[in-house]
Image 1: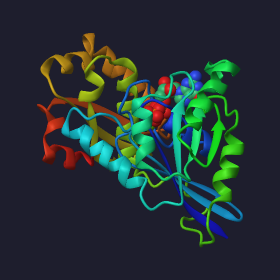
Image 2: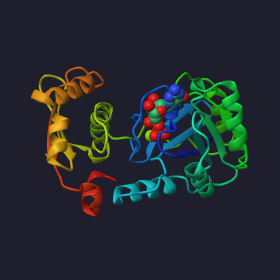
Image 3: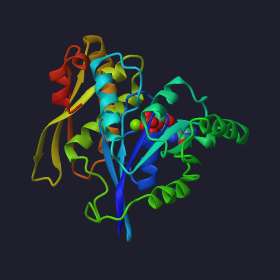
Image 4: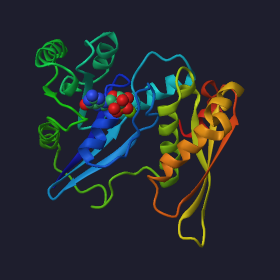
Length: 283
Ligand code: GDP
Ligand code: MG
Protein backbone atom coordinates (compact mmCIF):
# COMPACT_ATOMS: atom_id res chain seq x y z
CA UNK A 1 0.00 0.00 0.00
CA UNK A 2 1.12 3.54 -0.81
CA UNK A 3 -0.39 6.70 0.66
CA UNK A 4 0.31 10.37 1.13
CA UNK A 5 -0.72 13.98 0.76
CA UNK A 6 -0.93 16.13 -2.38
CA UNK A 7 -1.65 19.83 -1.95
CA UNK A 8 -3.09 22.01 -4.72
CA UNK A 9 -1.74 25.56 -4.74
CA UNK A 10 -1.83 28.53 -7.10
CA UNK A 11 -3.24 32.00 -7.63
CA UNK A 12 -6.98 32.50 -7.13
CA UNK A 13 -9.24 31.35 -9.98
CA UNK A 14 -6.80 29.08 -11.81
CA UNK A 15 -9.17 26.15 -11.23
CA UNK A 16 -7.72 24.29 -8.22
CA UNK A 17 -11.11 23.42 -6.74
CA UNK A 18 -12.57 22.41 -10.10
CA UNK A 19 -9.55 20.15 -10.59
CA UNK A 20 -10.00 18.50 -7.19
CA UNK A 21 -13.69 17.85 -7.90
CA UNK A 22 -12.76 16.38 -11.29
CA UNK A 23 -10.07 14.11 -9.81
CA UNK A 24 -12.52 12.77 -7.22
CA UNK A 25 -15.50 12.65 -9.58
CA UNK A 26 -17.50 14.37 -6.88
CA UNK A 27 -18.04 17.93 -5.72
CA UNK A 28 -16.15 18.46 -2.46
CA UNK A 29 -15.00 22.05 -2.91
CA UNK A 30 -17.11 24.98 -4.07
CA UNK A 31 -16.26 26.79 -7.31
CA UNK A 32 -16.90 30.25 -8.73
CA UNK A 33 -15.35 32.81 -11.01
CA UNK A 34 -14.66 35.08 -8.01
CA UNK A 35 -11.33 35.18 -6.17
CA UNK A 36 -11.19 33.76 -2.63
CA UNK A 37 -13.97 31.26 -3.17
CA UNK A 38 -11.99 28.63 -1.24
CA UNK A 39 -11.29 29.90 2.27
CA UNK A 40 -10.16 26.79 4.14
CA UNK A 41 -8.16 23.66 3.50
CA UNK A 42 -10.48 21.12 1.92
CA UNK A 43 -9.42 17.48 1.98
CA UNK A 44 -10.55 15.10 -0.71
CA UNK A 45 -9.54 11.44 -0.61
CA UNK A 46 -8.84 9.29 -3.66
CA UNK A 47 -8.87 5.62 -2.73
CA UNK A 48 -7.68 2.82 -5.02
CA UNK A 49 -6.92 -0.80 -4.08
CA UNK A 50 -3.19 -0.13 -3.67
CA UNK A 51 -2.98 3.61 -3.03
CA UNK A 52 -4.66 6.44 -1.19
CA UNK A 53 -4.01 10.08 -2.03
CA UNK A 54 -5.27 12.77 0.32
CA UNK A 55 -5.66 15.89 -1.80
CA UNK A 56 -5.71 19.24 -0.05
CA UNK A 57 -7.40 22.14 -1.82
CA UNK A 58 -6.32 25.59 -0.63
CA UNK A 59 -7.24 29.27 -0.95
CA UNK A 60 -5.56 31.08 -3.85
CA UNK A 61 -2.39 32.86 -2.80
CA UNK A 62 -2.72 36.59 -3.50
CA UNK A 63 -1.69 40.04 -2.32
CA UNK A 64 -3.80 40.40 0.85
CA UNK A 65 -5.87 43.52 1.52
CA UNK A 66 -7.62 42.37 4.67
CA UNK A 67 -6.90 40.16 7.64
CA UNK A 68 -9.03 37.50 5.95
CA UNK A 69 -6.67 37.67 2.95
CA UNK A 70 -3.65 37.21 5.20
CA UNK A 71 -5.26 34.22 6.90
CA UNK A 72 -6.12 32.64 3.55
CA UNK A 73 -2.52 32.92 2.39
CA UNK A 74 -1.28 31.37 5.64
CA UNK A 75 -3.79 28.53 5.28
CA UNK A 76 -2.52 27.80 1.78
CA UNK A 77 1.17 28.04 2.68
CA UNK A 78 0.67 25.75 5.71
CA UNK A 79 -1.04 23.14 3.56
CA UNK A 80 1.90 23.10 1.14
CA UNK A 81 4.43 22.38 3.88
CA UNK A 82 5.65 18.87 4.55
CA UNK A 83 3.45 17.11 2.01
CA UNK A 84 4.49 14.42 -0.47
CA UNK A 85 3.54 16.35 -3.62
CA UNK A 86 2.69 19.97 -4.31
CA UNK A 87 0.55 20.50 -7.40
CA UNK A 88 1.07 24.04 -8.65
CA UNK A 89 -1.65 25.20 -11.02
CA UNK A 90 -1.54 28.02 -13.56
CA UNK A 91 -4.17 29.21 -16.05
CA UNK A 92 -3.47 28.46 -19.73
CA UNK A 93 -5.53 31.49 -20.78
CA UNK A 94 -3.53 34.11 -18.84
CA UNK A 95 0.24 34.57 -19.13
CA UNK A 96 2.32 33.28 -16.22
CA UNK A 97 2.75 36.46 -14.20
CA UNK A 98 4.14 37.93 -11.01
CA UNK A 99 1.43 36.29 -8.91
CA UNK A 100 2.26 32.83 -10.30
CA UNK A 101 5.99 33.39 -9.84
CA UNK A 102 5.40 34.46 -6.25
CA UNK A 103 3.57 31.21 -5.48
CA UNK A 104 6.19 29.23 -7.39
CA UNK A 105 8.87 30.70 -5.13
CA UNK A 106 7.15 29.32 -2.02
CA UNK A 107 7.07 25.67 -3.05
CA UNK A 108 9.64 22.92 -3.68
CA UNK A 109 11.22 22.46 -7.11
CA UNK A 110 10.00 18.87 -7.27
CA UNK A 111 6.41 20.13 -7.47
CA UNK A 112 4.17 19.16 -10.37
CA UNK A 113 3.03 22.08 -12.53
CA UNK A 114 -0.45 21.95 -14.06
CA UNK A 115 -1.43 24.20 -16.96
CA UNK A 116 -5.22 24.22 -16.61
CA UNK A 117 -8.11 25.38 -18.81
CA UNK A 118 -6.53 24.06 -22.03
CA UNK A 119 -10.09 23.74 -23.40
CA UNK A 120 -10.13 27.52 -23.70
CA UNK A 121 -6.66 27.96 -25.21
CA UNK A 122 -5.34 27.14 -28.69
CA UNK A 123 -2.58 24.52 -28.99
CA UNK A 124 -0.12 27.36 -29.68
CA UNK A 125 -1.18 29.17 -26.52
CA UNK A 126 -0.84 25.97 -24.48
CA UNK A 127 2.67 25.42 -25.84
CA UNK A 128 3.67 29.01 -25.14
CA UNK A 129 2.30 28.73 -21.62
CA UNK A 130 4.13 25.44 -21.02
CA UNK A 131 7.33 27.13 -22.20
CA UNK A 132 6.83 30.08 -19.83
CA UNK A 133 5.92 27.79 -16.94
CA UNK A 134 8.92 25.65 -17.87
CA UNK A 135 11.19 28.53 -16.91
CA UNK A 136 10.07 28.00 -13.32
CA UNK A 137 12.00 24.73 -13.38
CA UNK A 138 9.53 22.26 -11.88
CA UNK A 139 9.82 18.47 -12.01
CA UNK A 140 6.85 17.73 -14.28
CA UNK A 141 4.31 19.56 -16.42
CA UNK A 142 0.74 18.57 -17.21
CA UNK A 143 -1.59 20.44 -19.56
CA UNK A 144 -5.13 19.65 -18.41
CA UNK A 145 -8.72 20.78 -18.50
CA UNK A 146 -10.39 20.40 -15.14
CA UNK A 147 -13.63 21.21 -16.92
CA UNK A 148 -13.54 18.47 -19.58
CA UNK A 149 -11.19 16.07 -17.77
CA UNK A 150 -8.62 16.22 -20.56
CA UNK A 151 -5.17 15.18 -19.26
CA UNK A 152 -6.45 14.59 -15.72
CA UNK A 153 -5.85 10.80 -15.71
CA UNK A 154 -2.20 11.33 -16.68
CA UNK A 155 -1.83 13.96 -13.95
CA UNK A 156 -3.34 11.63 -11.33
CA UNK A 157 -1.03 8.82 -12.49
CA UNK A 158 2.00 11.01 -11.94
CA UNK A 159 0.78 12.06 -8.48
CA UNK A 160 0.02 8.44 -7.52
CA UNK A 161 3.52 7.42 -8.63
CA UNK A 162 5.02 9.78 -6.07
CA UNK A 163 3.12 8.42 -3.08
CA UNK A 164 5.46 6.75 -0.59
CA UNK A 165 4.75 3.40 1.03
CA UNK A 166 2.27 3.84 3.82
CA UNK A 167 -0.99 2.67 5.38
CA UNK A 168 -4.50 3.60 4.34
CA UNK A 169 -5.26 6.90 6.10
CA UNK A 170 -9.04 7.15 5.68
CA UNK A 171 -11.84 4.58 5.38
CA UNK A 172 -12.62 3.33 1.82
CA UNK A 173 -15.86 5.27 1.51
CA UNK A 174 -14.62 8.59 2.84
CA UNK A 175 -14.24 11.14 0.05
CA UNK A 176 -13.99 14.29 2.14
CA UNK A 177 -13.54 15.33 5.75
CA UNK A 178 -15.64 18.49 5.40
CA UNK A 179 -18.33 18.35 8.13
CA UNK A 180 -21.92 18.32 6.83
CA UNK A 181 -22.98 21.61 8.42
CA UNK A 182 -19.92 23.37 7.07
CA UNK A 183 -20.64 21.94 3.62
CA UNK A 184 -24.20 23.31 3.60
CA UNK A 185 -22.85 26.76 4.53
CA UNK A 186 -20.35 26.44 1.66
CA UNK A 187 -23.11 25.54 -0.80
CA UNK A 188 -25.03 28.65 0.27
CA UNK A 189 -21.95 30.82 -0.16
CA UNK A 190 -21.27 29.27 -3.58
CA UNK A 191 -24.73 30.29 -4.82
CA UNK A 192 -24.27 33.78 -3.42
CA UNK A 193 -20.94 34.07 -5.24
CA UNK A 194 -22.73 33.23 -8.47
CA UNK A 195 -25.34 35.95 -8.11
CA UNK A 196 -23.39 38.82 -6.52
CA UNK A 197 -20.59 41.00 -7.81
CA UNK A 198 -18.13 43.78 -6.93
CA UNK A 199 -17.22 43.75 -3.24
CA UNK A 200 -20.20 41.65 -2.11
CA UNK A 201 -18.62 38.20 -2.73
CA UNK A 202 -15.69 39.02 -0.46
CA UNK A 203 -18.01 40.38 2.23
CA UNK A 204 -20.15 37.26 2.47
CA UNK A 205 -19.62 34.53 5.05
CA UNK A 206 -22.03 31.72 5.90
CA UNK A 207 -22.44 29.51 8.91
CA UNK A 208 -24.95 26.91 9.94
CA UNK A 209 -26.24 27.77 13.42
CA UNK A 210 -28.82 25.01 13.89
CA UNK A 211 -29.16 21.47 12.60
CA UNK A 212 -32.14 19.57 13.95
CA UNK A 213 -33.46 16.21 12.93
CA UNK A 214 -37.21 16.38 12.45
CA UNK A 215 -39.92 13.70 12.09
CA UNK A 216 -40.32 14.49 8.39
CA UNK A 217 -37.11 12.63 7.63
CA UNK A 218 -34.66 15.35 6.67
CA UNK A 219 -32.78 17.79 8.86
CA UNK A 220 -34.00 21.30 9.57
CA UNK A 221 -31.03 23.56 8.88
CA UNK A 222 -30.64 27.21 9.79
CA UNK A 223 -27.92 29.04 7.92
CA UNK A 224 -26.83 32.59 8.63
CA UNK A 225 -25.43 34.76 5.89
CA UNK A 226 -23.14 37.49 7.18
CA UNK A 227 -22.49 40.63 5.19
CA UNK A 228 -20.55 43.72 6.16
CA UNK A 229 -22.95 46.53 5.15
CA UNK A 230 -26.67 47.27 5.16
CA UNK A 231 -26.53 47.87 1.41
CA UNK A 232 -25.12 44.36 0.93
CA UNK A 233 -27.94 42.91 3.00
CA UNK A 234 -30.40 44.38 0.51
CA UNK A 235 -28.49 42.88 -2.42
CA UNK A 236 -28.32 39.43 -0.85
CA UNK A 237 -32.04 39.41 0.02
CA UNK A 238 -33.05 40.80 -3.38
CA UNK A 239 -36.26 42.47 -4.41
CA UNK A 240 -39.06 40.84 -2.43
CA UNK A 241 -36.59 38.19 -1.24
CA UNK A 242 -35.96 36.98 -4.79
CA UNK A 243 -32.19 36.45 -4.48
CA UNK A 244 -32.44 34.57 -1.21
CA UNK A 245 -35.22 32.43 -2.61
CA UNK A 246 -33.20 31.49 -5.70
CA UNK A 247 -30.16 30.68 -3.54
CA UNK A 248 -32.26 28.49 -1.24
CA UNK A 249 -33.75 26.60 -4.16
CA UNK A 250 -30.38 25.96 -5.80
CA UNK A 251 -28.88 24.69 -2.54
CA UNK A 252 -31.87 22.47 -1.67
CA UNK A 253 -31.40 20.64 -4.98
CA UNK A 254 -28.00 19.56 -3.69
CA UNK A 255 -29.22 18.39 -0.28
CA UNK A 256 -30.77 15.02 0.54
CA UNK A 257 -34.54 14.90 0.01
CA UNK A 258 -36.53 16.17 2.96
CA UNK A 259 -33.91 18.67 4.11
CA UNK A 260 -35.43 21.95 5.20
CA UNK A 261 -33.20 25.01 4.81
CA UNK A 262 -33.82 28.43 6.35
CA UNK A 263 -31.63 31.38 5.39
CA UNK A 264 -31.11 34.53 7.45
CA UNK A 265 -29.05 37.59 6.56
CA UNK A 266 -27.17 39.51 9.24
CA UNK A 267 -24.91 42.53 9.10
CA UNK A 268 -21.61 41.97 10.93
CA UNK A 269 -19.53 45.05 10.23
CA UNK A 270 -16.01 44.44 8.92
CA UNK A 271 -15.91 40.79 9.99
CA UNK A 272 -13.12 40.34 7.41
CA UNK A 273 -10.84 42.56 9.44
CA UNK A 274 -11.63 41.26 12.94
CA UNK A 275 -9.52 38.38 14.25
CA UNK A 276 -12.24 36.96 16.52
CA UNK A 277 -14.92 37.07 13.84
CA UNK A 278 -12.59 35.22 11.45
CA UNK A 279 -11.72 32.57 14.01
CA UNK A 280 -15.40 32.02 14.82
CA UNK A 281 -16.07 31.44 11.12
CA UNK A 282 -13.28 28.88 10.91
CA UNK A 283 -10.93 31.03 8.78
P1 GDP B 1 -9.74 28.21 -7.79
O1 GDP B 1 -9.93 29.57 -7.23
O2 GDP B 1 -8.34 28.02 -8.28
O3 GDP B 1 -10.17 27.10 -6.88
O4 GDP B 1 -10.66 28.13 -9.11
P2 GDP B 1 -12.11 27.49 -9.29
O5 GDP B 1 -12.01 26.01 -9.33
O6 GDP B 1 -13.06 28.08 -8.30
O7 GDP B 1 -12.45 27.97 -10.76
C1 GDP B 1 -12.40 29.33 -11.14
C2 GDP B 1 -13.17 29.52 -12.43
O8 GDP B 1 -12.49 28.87 -13.50
C3 GDP B 1 -14.57 28.91 -12.39
O9 GDP B 1 -15.44 29.77 -13.10
C4 GDP B 1 -14.40 27.59 -13.10
O10 GDP B 1 -15.57 27.12 -13.72
C5 GDP B 1 -13.34 27.94 -14.14
N1 GDP B 1 -12.54 26.76 -14.56
C6 GDP B 1 -11.86 25.92 -13.76
N2 GDP B 1 -11.21 24.98 -14.48
C7 GDP B 1 -11.52 25.22 -15.77
C8 GDP B 1 -11.15 24.60 -17.01
O11 GDP B 1 -10.43 23.59 -17.08
N3 GDP B 1 -11.65 25.16 -18.14
C9 GDP B 1 -12.44 26.27 -18.13
N4 GDP B 1 -12.87 26.75 -19.29
N5 GDP B 1 -12.80 26.88 -16.98
C10 GDP B 1 -12.35 26.36 -15.82
MG1 MG C 1 -10.83 27.19 -4.97
